Image (cartoon, rainbow over all chains, first blue to last red; front, side):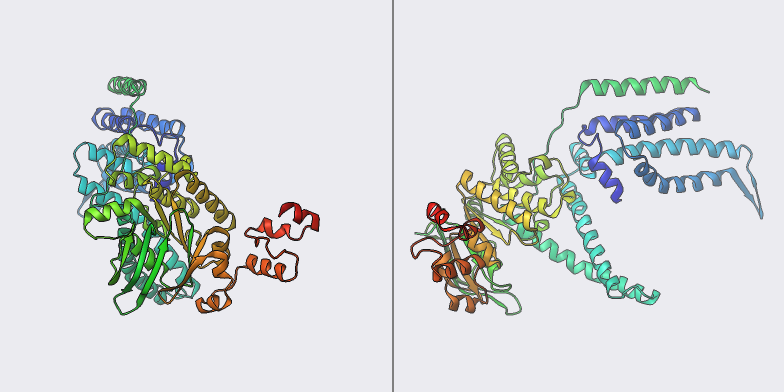
Length: 243
Length: 284
């Protein structure tokens, strides 16, 4: 969670308009899913990885760490397709291996496309984008506040955890469970106190009930859009031709 | 007539703790005021009253000599003129990026987009955080958060800026930098600065006036030197005399400093006392 957030906020394409990044990611995703050949999906996987690492300059270690967890699910999910169960017998399904590889290629390409978006775009930009295409303001505000508080809460939990460890709260399994329950029980009142304090802070700045802020509007660059459309068009043609 | 004034303000928190017990306080235009007192003496509660966040249970708060009203329109006007920066910056920053957070106050004032943008830019530059405008608020350091929180109020161009323990938790350099930025801000905007602190040395260096707080009351309000020179008052408030003042008084006693010469207010002035005699005459 935290490495994805840090990367989203500090990468080279952080300030690129959301429209460009979503067009790139979702367009590629669509190609990976729609094209009949699985080689096409592999092409998408390769190109989007290149864009993530070379274009947005996401550190390979960060990219890999963010990828490992979904990759695990993906492997388990598609490998099971290769087998069939008949009574007590487990055997390779006819065309099972091929089928599972096809699925894996598509799923991997899709995951990499979304990972590109996640690693280059802060969650708050995504919410702002959703707001523009019709998400109600109330829900968007709630989402943004929750996002902000998540970090405060994580900081508090981390500090409490350290404080417990420093007073031997984690020495036995039993005590560790007890410490954890205390921590969870204490987070709630803390969160409420935090919310109360924030309300004072907002009131001091003339809050009337809605959390309006001025967003920086970023101009979509026409050359960038043209380049993305060209790239995706070319990939679509190549992917359709491979069998 | 004072710009902002508290008269016999009383406030008890639920549970019966009497945080303010007949507080009288005057804020004069252009005079830096330090609210000085130990922990739990009512400093924060006093600031919350001066900004209309809390309503006195008895007594009143006056702006330009008129008792303040607590209807939404009056409160909006009040908070436009009197800005309050909370001690914990995390209680104030809620938006995704620095520039967005700073734009919150000006937007609440009902300003147009272009004006809001100009205010945000001005505030970020005044606090020397313009380079962080696009940064996510949860990725700032402690000192940066503090400055951004102050910028959020500065963007509203208040006449009075109330700062609750602005230097708490800052290291030496951070404190010096912040005070320099505040002094600069005072010059450029003409805002009157009020800060609360328990640090006598800080109050002595920075403020023109101090109000000594003890038990929810101002024991005394007056010029820094006069007030902090009084050992009885200091003892009552549970505070020590600022080191520079102690040094200056001793220099006067021993004749190093002439009877009429002003007492040193900064480290440099104090160090100058130790220079060979002609240098003192030349300087003083």
